[in-house]
Image (tube, helix red, strand yellow):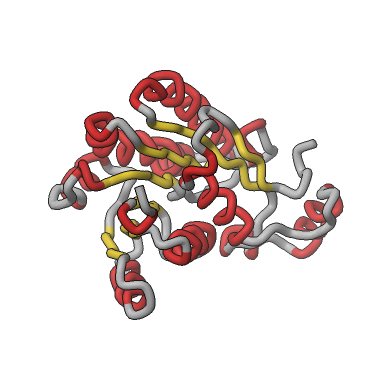
Amino acid sequence: MENSKKKIIVTGSNRGIGYAIVDRLLREKFSVIMVDYDGEVINTAKNLNKIYNNVDGIQCDVSDFNACNDAFKDINKNEIYGIVNNAGINRDALFKNMEYNQWDAVIKTDLYSVFNVTKIFVNGMIENNCGRIVNISSASWNGNIGQANYAAAKAGVIGFTKTLAKELGKYNIKANAIIPGFIKTPMTDQLPDKIREKFIDRIPLKRIGLPEDVANATAFLLDEKSDYINGDLIEVGGGLVL
């Protein structure tokens, strides 16, 4: 199947890593449906359409299953070849100070959303006997001070991914996860310079990663060149977690 005939849904795609993934996929001739909580995603898609002519934008809170059902009701489920579950937030705090709403918001946005979107489209992939699911986790999945909520969600993404790989492989559906390290995003831009420098010092390549680095790995996992990769974790962190 030519990439031009493959339609990919990318969540959390109006900025940062998600937007970089969309841009890379469009340059690879995929068709893309951008999904974001921010309603500006619709205008972003319109602007991209002036260049690529194969992108749509949908506003949706993907942490809400009913909202997903409503937002995606007009999409032909059999037209979806791939899903990139990228939507995520952080609400960092030491666990002793963490409020329930900080826990709840991160778990729903970073973990529930992966279930919500995948659940809606997976049966169409099964009927087509092909498909790709790429879930964006984080190097924090292994535990990180001040991120009990975020680490739990991202570890859950990994367990979910590996389970899908085992269940769906017989339908020629591959599920993999990407583990970004310290990547330049609006989220990491909020960090104080001293903390940012400490992270960079831990990276063997001695530089912060770019959203495009994650986008390149995502495009590879959606491409036929990765056809025998399933249930794997692809780390994009310059060696941060070695």
